[in-house]
Image 1: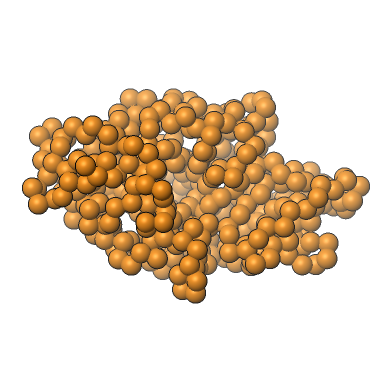
Image 2 (image 1 turned 180 degrees about the vertical axis):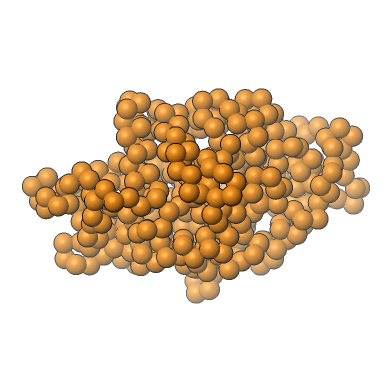
Amino acid sequence: MAAASLGGAYAKLDLSSTSNVVVYWGQNSFKGNGELAQQPLGYYCNDENIDVIVLAFLMTINGLGGAPEIDFSNANDNCTTFDGTNLLKCPQIGADINTCQKKGKTILLSIGGATYSEGGFQSESAAKAGADLLWKTFGPPTTQGPFLNATAHNGKSRYHNGRFNRLNRVNSTDIHAARANSTAVRRPFGDATIDGFDFDFEAPVKNMAPFANRLRELSDADKSKQYFLTAAPQCPYPDAADKDILNGPVSIDAVFVQFYNNWCGVNSFSAGQQKQSSFNFEQWDNWAKTVSQNKKAKVLLGVPANTSAASTGYIPASELEPVIAYSKSFESFGGVMMWDVSQAYGNKGFLDGVKGALRNSTAHLLRHGFRLPSFYPVIGR
């Protein structure tokens, strides 16, 4: 279940809808130039085709100076860092989050990514403390302490031209006492509050269930708005990296299953077949209804938004339509996730095509007796 009442402010991820479109932002994976480079977060919030934007990534929970670390590729150029840490302070992103939420977008923060290397936590207590830290850093603002200065010792940002210049570890005596105060609040996005957290681990991690459950507990305690917990497993089931979170102990609102870079991707879909031999959305639907703690969890079809977005699995929006129609016949279907928004904007018409397919695909298809029109092509076979 979602963490607060369905009347919560701004949140656009609609758990009753089959037409949600989720995009990841922050890694500039298309690596284009000019208009094709990743644009500021607020730019994409003007797009009516997008419902949810996931900020990618928070790649370290306990970094230098006991602070988390985030990375948003070329958007880092507009950020500074908190002294004694590698934690970015990004007032423009904070302002964009507030603006996007007022425009009805849900903004999540994804934890993990390919560069995450902490391996989780050594104990349950450490995991809960990590959740408390992230809630204080990205959740609702508190009055526990001052916002800390966010410049390097030389007054310049530690990020330059999109590259992260890591600091050497400093002796605790090098940090001003005010900065070492345990009650101090380092908030990268200022007073902006994200709408929840996404788990995107690419390798097994320790003690993630108590970590996620603590985030759920903190979310449930705040009745001011609706919060979400989501995960982005790979399509082979069970997902090796996220199984400790997904297989029972944690109430997850939605999973953005990566149906690419694997044998079970959307490119393995067989048109016109009720039973799929490789494409395994049905297996994830079964997870949602029988294994997940939240039996109303939604499953979103995760796809690459361009040919360069994944090693395998990309298919054009026109060929995704029968895949969406088939997937939509399952009760848990909640929409489409795309990696990532820079790839989608570099692939003219893809985002419009997917949103159109979601709107046009037959909503009342039943799994039993499912048939696709014969004019749909066989994909990946």
